[in-house]
Length: 195
Image (cartoon, rainbow, N blue to C red; front, side, top):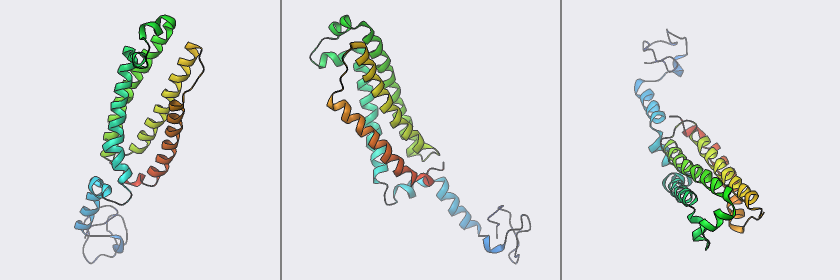
Protein backbone atom coordinates (compact mmCIF):
# COMPACT_ATOMS: atom_id res chain seq x y z
CA UNK A 1 0.00 0.00 0.00
CA UNK A 2 0.92 3.64 -0.38
CA UNK A 3 0.10 6.47 1.98
CA UNK A 4 -2.35 8.91 0.44
CA UNK A 5 -0.94 11.75 2.55
CA UNK A 6 2.81 11.46 1.90
CA UNK A 7 3.04 8.84 -0.89
CA UNK A 8 5.41 6.52 1.01
CA UNK A 9 5.02 2.78 0.62
CA UNK A 10 3.83 1.13 3.83
CA UNK A 11 3.49 -2.54 4.83
CA UNK A 12 0.12 -4.13 3.97
CA UNK A 13 -0.67 -4.97 7.60
CA UNK A 14 -0.02 -1.41 8.92
CA UNK A 15 -2.77 0.55 10.62
CA UNK A 16 -0.90 3.85 10.29
CA UNK A 17 1.68 5.25 7.89
CA UNK A 18 5.15 4.72 9.32
CA UNK A 19 6.29 8.00 7.76
CA UNK A 20 3.53 10.55 8.59
CA UNK A 21 1.14 8.68 10.91
CA UNK A 22 -2.03 8.89 8.79
CA UNK A 23 -4.57 6.10 9.34
CA UNK A 24 -4.55 3.16 6.89
CA UNK A 25 -8.23 3.80 6.09
CA UNK A 26 -7.06 7.00 4.44
CA UNK A 27 -4.54 5.21 2.23
CA UNK A 28 -5.04 3.81 -1.20
CA UNK A 29 -3.32 1.73 -3.84
CA UNK A 30 -0.89 3.10 -6.42
CA UNK A 31 -3.48 2.55 -9.17
CA UNK A 32 -6.02 4.78 -7.38
CA UNK A 33 -3.39 7.47 -6.85
CA UNK A 34 -2.40 7.34 -10.52
CA UNK A 35 -6.04 7.63 -11.66
CA UNK A 36 -6.59 10.62 -9.39
CA UNK A 37 -3.39 12.30 -10.64
CA UNK A 38 -4.42 11.72 -14.26
CA UNK A 39 -7.73 13.47 -13.64
CA UNK A 40 -6.03 16.55 -12.22
CA UNK A 41 -3.19 16.57 -14.74
CA UNK A 42 -5.44 16.06 -17.79
CA UNK A 43 -8.81 17.61 -16.94
CA UNK A 44 -9.48 18.70 -20.51
CA UNK A 45 -11.18 15.56 -21.75
CA UNK A 46 -13.14 14.86 -18.57
CA UNK A 47 -14.12 18.47 -17.89
CA UNK A 48 -15.23 19.40 -21.41
CA UNK A 49 -17.48 16.36 -21.56
CA UNK A 50 -19.22 17.27 -18.28
CA UNK A 51 -22.76 18.68 -18.36
CA UNK A 52 -22.94 22.46 -18.43
CA UNK A 53 -19.81 22.93 -20.55
CA UNK A 54 -21.56 23.90 -23.81
CA UNK A 55 -21.10 27.60 -22.99
CA UNK A 56 -17.41 26.98 -22.30
CA UNK A 57 -17.07 25.29 -25.71
CA UNK A 58 -18.81 28.25 -27.34
CA UNK A 59 -16.36 30.65 -25.67
CA UNK A 60 -13.17 28.80 -26.62
CA UNK A 61 -14.21 27.60 -30.09
CA UNK A 62 -16.18 30.60 -31.33
CA UNK A 63 -16.50 33.72 -29.18
CA UNK A 64 -12.81 34.40 -28.50
CA UNK A 65 -11.80 33.71 -32.12
CA UNK A 66 -14.57 36.05 -33.30
CA UNK A 67 -13.44 38.67 -30.75
CA UNK A 68 -9.87 38.42 -32.02
CA UNK A 69 -10.96 38.84 -35.65
CA UNK A 70 -13.27 41.72 -34.73
CA UNK A 71 -10.52 43.51 -32.80
CA UNK A 72 -8.05 43.12 -35.65
CA UNK A 73 -10.62 44.54 -38.08
CA UNK A 74 -11.49 47.43 -35.77
CA UNK A 75 -7.82 48.12 -35.09
CA UNK A 76 -6.91 48.25 -38.76
CA UNK A 77 -9.88 50.46 -39.54
CA UNK A 78 -8.95 52.84 -36.72
CA UNK A 79 -5.28 52.93 -37.72
CA UNK A 80 -6.07 53.66 -41.37
CA UNK A 81 -9.13 55.88 -40.82
CA UNK A 82 -11.27 53.57 -42.94
CA UNK A 83 -14.07 53.65 -40.37
CA UNK A 84 -14.96 57.18 -41.55
CA UNK A 85 -14.78 56.16 -45.20
CA UNK A 86 -17.23 53.29 -44.58
CA UNK A 87 -19.58 55.63 -42.71
CA UNK A 88 -20.01 57.71 -45.86
CA UNK A 89 -17.50 60.39 -44.98
CA UNK A 90 -13.88 60.94 -45.67
CA UNK A 91 -11.12 60.29 -43.17
CA UNK A 92 -9.12 63.19 -44.61
CA UNK A 93 -12.05 65.58 -44.06
CA UNK A 94 -12.67 64.32 -40.52
CA UNK A 95 -9.02 64.57 -39.57
CA UNK A 96 -8.72 68.07 -41.06
CA UNK A 97 -11.63 69.20 -38.85
CA UNK A 98 -10.43 67.31 -35.75
CA UNK A 99 -6.66 66.70 -35.98
CA UNK A 100 -6.46 65.29 -32.43
CA UNK A 101 -8.93 62.59 -33.45
CA UNK A 102 -6.21 60.98 -35.57
CA UNK A 103 -4.09 60.40 -32.44
CA UNK A 104 -7.14 59.04 -30.60
CA UNK A 105 -7.83 56.64 -33.48
CA UNK A 106 -4.18 55.54 -33.57
CA UNK A 107 -4.31 54.83 -29.82
CA UNK A 108 -7.55 52.89 -30.21
CA UNK A 109 -6.16 50.93 -33.17
CA UNK A 110 -3.15 49.81 -31.15
CA UNK A 111 -5.42 48.89 -28.22
CA UNK A 112 -7.63 46.82 -30.55
CA UNK A 113 -4.65 44.90 -31.95
CA UNK A 114 -3.50 44.26 -28.36
CA UNK A 115 -6.97 43.03 -27.43
CA UNK A 116 -6.94 40.68 -30.42
CA UNK A 117 -3.72 39.13 -29.14
CA UNK A 118 -5.16 39.01 -25.62
CA UNK A 119 -8.21 37.12 -26.93
CA UNK A 120 -5.96 34.40 -28.38
CA UNK A 121 -3.91 34.22 -25.17
CA UNK A 122 -7.03 33.96 -22.99
CA UNK A 123 -8.49 31.34 -25.30
CA UNK A 124 -5.36 29.19 -24.98
CA UNK A 125 -5.37 29.56 -21.18
CA UNK A 126 -9.01 28.49 -20.99
CA UNK A 127 -8.60 25.60 -23.43
CA UNK A 128 -5.65 24.24 -21.42
CA UNK A 129 -7.53 24.70 -18.12
CA UNK A 130 -4.75 26.89 -16.74
CA UNK A 131 -5.12 28.04 -13.17
CA UNK A 132 -6.61 31.53 -13.12
CA UNK A 133 -7.80 31.33 -16.76
CA UNK A 134 -11.41 32.30 -15.89
CA UNK A 135 -10.13 35.45 -14.17
CA UNK A 136 -8.10 36.30 -17.29
CA UNK A 137 -11.25 35.88 -19.38
CA UNK A 138 -13.27 38.12 -17.06
CA UNK A 139 -10.45 40.70 -17.14
CA UNK A 140 -10.50 40.52 -20.94
CA UNK A 141 -14.24 41.26 -20.96
CA UNK A 142 -13.83 44.12 -18.48
CA UNK A 143 -10.98 45.70 -20.47
CA UNK A 144 -12.94 45.30 -23.69
CA UNK A 145 -15.81 47.25 -22.13
CA UNK A 146 -13.53 49.89 -20.56
CA UNK A 147 -11.57 50.59 -23.75
CA UNK A 148 -14.74 50.85 -25.86
CA UNK A 149 -16.36 53.30 -23.47
CA UNK A 150 -13.12 55.29 -23.12
CA UNK A 151 -12.79 55.58 -26.91
CA UNK A 152 -16.37 56.80 -27.29
CA UNK A 153 -15.98 59.35 -24.50
CA UNK A 154 -12.62 60.65 -25.76
CA UNK A 155 -13.92 60.90 -29.34
CA UNK A 156 -16.97 62.81 -28.07
CA UNK A 157 -14.77 65.23 -26.14
CA UNK A 158 -12.48 65.79 -29.14
CA UNK A 159 -15.33 66.39 -31.58
CA UNK A 160 -17.52 68.25 -29.10
CA UNK A 161 -20.47 66.08 -30.10
CA UNK A 162 -21.67 64.30 -27.01
CA UNK A 163 -23.72 61.47 -28.38
CA UNK A 164 -23.84 57.74 -27.95
CA UNK A 165 -25.62 55.83 -30.65
CA UNK A 166 -27.92 52.90 -29.98
CA UNK A 167 -25.41 50.26 -31.14
CA UNK A 168 -22.71 51.59 -28.78
CA UNK A 169 -25.16 51.65 -25.88
CA UNK A 170 -26.43 48.14 -26.58
CA UNK A 171 -22.87 46.88 -26.96
CA UNK A 172 -21.90 48.42 -23.61
CA UNK A 173 -24.94 46.97 -21.85
CA UNK A 174 -24.36 43.52 -23.34
CA UNK A 175 -20.69 43.68 -22.25
CA UNK A 176 -21.71 44.31 -18.64
CA UNK A 177 -24.32 41.52 -18.75
CA UNK A 178 -21.76 39.11 -20.26
CA UNK A 179 -19.24 40.03 -17.58
CA UNK A 180 -21.70 39.33 -14.75
CA UNK A 181 -23.08 36.10 -16.23
CA UNK A 182 -19.64 34.73 -17.06
CA UNK A 183 -18.47 35.59 -13.56
CA UNK A 184 -21.26 33.44 -12.13
CA UNK A 185 -20.67 30.67 -14.69
CA UNK A 186 -16.94 30.37 -14.05
CA UNK A 187 -17.22 30.73 -10.27
CA UNK A 188 -19.11 27.42 -10.30
CA UNK A 189 -16.41 25.77 -12.42
CA UNK A 190 -13.17 27.23 -11.08
CA UNK A 191 -12.24 23.83 -9.58
CA UNK A 192 -11.65 22.57 -13.14
CA UNK A 193 -8.84 25.06 -13.82
CA UNK A 194 -5.91 23.42 -12.05
CA UNK A 195 -3.09 23.19 -14.61
